[in-house]
Length: 540
Image 1 (spheres, rainbow, N blue to C red):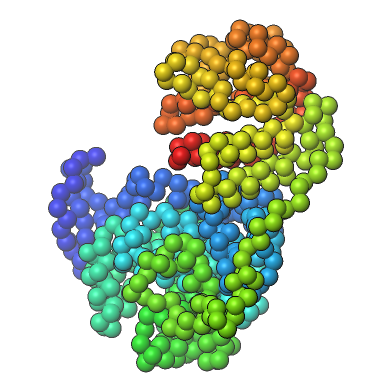
Image 2 (tube, helix red, strand yellow; image 1 turned 135 degrees about the horizontal axis):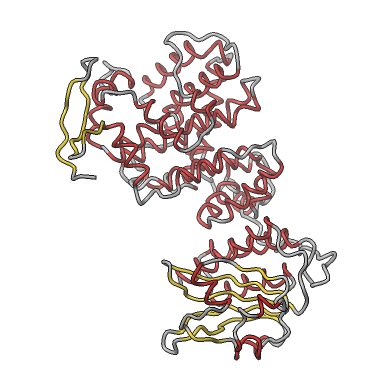
């Protein structure tokens, strides 16, 4: 693509001003530029795919619950924020039980609640300019709208569709978020017209940009494979008082619009007179659809305010929002320790260790039947240790190795790392039978050869071998390994790669054949544990 020159304004067939950018190979509209900015931004490599993956999970599918748990646990930061939110004061109203795992959060708070919270946090984390005040304001607005949608469930017969409305409400102002991120000057120009009160947001968008920001939002959500019914819910209904919707899709449109327009009440950024005026407008437009009255609206906003604040704190937005208070009433979000001296203890997460999972039966190779729950339990413990920030690298590595060792029934397991001074890969930590003896001899040259270990690292592939004595596999085993561990039959090799360069591997084995191998779900959990060890090695 050619070099980008200065922007200019031109007239389109509708006489609107259109912001374009001249490029040697042609001309791109601002809308195309914004879409390209999102898809090409190196800071957003996985936002779209992450959102698409979570959005498509359905609460009616039992497997989705497990997949949501796996996905959250694979991201240490996301896990920490979801657990923090789950144990916040807002959710203590739902359950007074300690929530120490993602599975428990999904069970006690509900699949949809955890799913939409995860989407909100991913959206915030994915925005490269989230600390800029104008971007932060739009992100806070999006999160508030999403929370309002959850509280709307009590006012509608379409309860099962609240999840889709929450997603639509979260992305309702996505166009403004992206404009604020990539074209802040145009964002300020557009919002100045809206603030003056002479133009609606769509009118200001057409005047300044030459197109509706809603079309930008729709284009990106299509790019991210968000379901069509959610995208269609972003379309606005005609102005004036709304009547009872004819179908689910109409109701979703109305609900998403209500949540977006009611968000300023949760944020508490308007003057009292402006809030009264906004409430009247909401009652006039949406009152019949949701059977709204002032007391009902006030209660809905009050509940949404507390939960929004907790979500903003968990997403690391609230502490940055010094100019826009979430609630004018501190009693909703602060503790009066003098009057309620036991409240802190009541809300403190219980640190007692959960009951150890029992290994009921094992395969002939010694692998437990319940390997997946055991792996998940190990991931949870490792995540909690990492989230605390107060740990020794050696302890975390041993915890990760022990989780793999116990859950999969290995005889010996070790972490092997590159020793640049000795030009070799050398075992550093190990567990199992004769582990110190094996650890001492477990080292090999960094010079690549066509053996199992170098090939795994060169191609960055995780390897599971059911029977290493099969001739064609035996040929790949290096002499040093067959000498040190001549009876190793079933083997696991997990290469550790950073910036496309091998830093070592995790090795584990058993003395017997493993006909059952590793299931798809077990493989996911093994990779998560491997990822946690990699993160720890890079951060300490």
